[in-house]
Image (cartoon, rainbow, N blue to C red; front, side, top):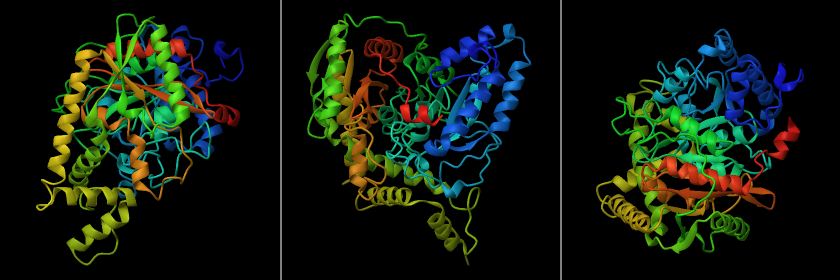
Length: 495
């Protein structure tokens, strides 16, 4: 290995994407050496973590060699930095399953817009990361292929649905990763795995080529080791896209966060998230982080958002209704799995979907079909949309008084694998603090704030629409003050 390791193997356990960029720019390490180091790390720890569904070693090494063939002076800033991809993004020529048997062996003929952007920027794709099937879940136990484990405790879940992406970064298998957030699927696993998870404003990033779950809620975002990396990756993927009519891009680039204090800013502590559902250890870490905001010059006051208590119920009706519509395309006709045993077209549809979809996907399709049915539309779906409007209005009123709102990201630390598998309602309540942000289409970020019983606790900061630049600067200032160790010790030992 070159100068970065003084002839020894390169230690990737503390590398951020920015640090990778610096090493490559100086010539301390080649793209091939850096990619090889991450592939070796994956080989060493992923048998236990199970973050990846498939590792594209040959593709990654070929891409790294192509970067090394260019003179350093002619490279783009992030060229040669590796990244992991949630298996929800279409990547041309690479199997993309959404962790579902119904899409097993599906090879997309095109790149999602964000994948095309990352290719243009010269990033190295290490492979596809595990997730809850079709992004439906809060623990990554709903994958059709295997359960990802939390690098801080292999007997616990990493969160979901972007659990593979969060665990990958926490276990130092990639310096950063992409995920999607529908009701908290970036922020919640970021909290449970002790990494930074950013959900941008709805529409800031194109969804073209992202396999849909709930189209009015889905948003691509980032999972990184620190806030600077989150800002950099957001700038690489954000932007308006003619292929996605809901995309708007950002009003200004996120830039490089560098704020040192929080003077002049007002923060609202969301009262409804501080009740019995918030475990005492999480509350203690949250309160300490609030004290840090005050020490940095910010003003913190309690704010009530009464309608957020309706958030989980409204979210699961709206999301399930949209999921039923989006997943109708998986019928065995055009792509993906088709049953081998059917006597007519109707039976082919039924058997294909019965064999291809897992229990949680079937449950949500059934909920959505019921909520949209003629006799119950007004009672359920229409009511959920009214509740969504109330949530949007509550946030708007709060932002008249406060610059940012704050809460725990998850009311608990990572729970044991299997603990909530038989209780869907308990699983759904894992998203208690995150779903209202998604319903209101707001940006939110989770940063590591400390530990409870040796497990990471996340701190959520919520901003007004398109406030990503300010949000990331606030998160950066607090991150520097808290200075939480984000290297997972079990994964580190395993390597």
